[in-house]
Length: 160
Image 1 (tube, rainbow, N blue to C red):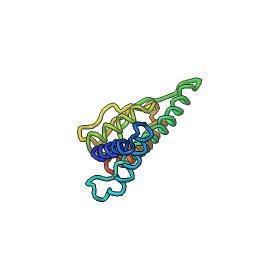
Image 2 (cartoon, rainbow, N blue to C red):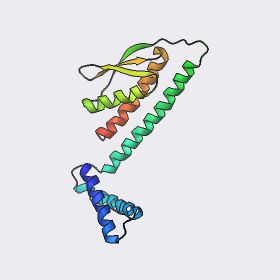
Image 3 (spheres, rainbow, N blue to C red):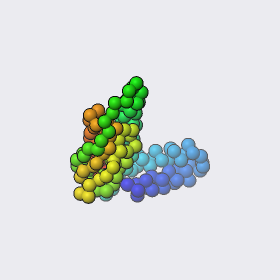
Image 4 (cartoon, one colour):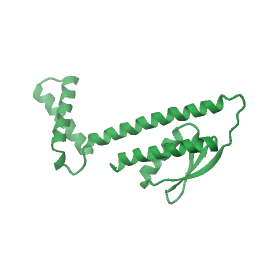
């Protein structure tokens, strides 16, 4: 993927040289020409087309924003009650992600959403210990969030 980005930047720069116009608009048009050229020759490249990975990263970002808003609403609803009645606790969650990058990414995404924090990852890397603000209500939303994050992380890292 990094090689494809460099090739695309090289094509954009060459496009600016050939057009004899050093403007941002000419660079952007050259970058678009480079995307088209790389898309046409994608069969001959050893890696998959890099724009699909960029789009998957953007989708992961959108899923994170959606989960951030939904968990924020859940936390706001619990905090603004006249009498706070929460039962915080720690629960375990099995994951099928592999590798340090995937485990770290799901742990960070979960810790960034309000109401849950990944306390520890088991040495085997398959079990997450998560502290939730309200076990009965938050644990189910955290499990749904983890499933969505796992699906998107697999699309980004594995192309599945």
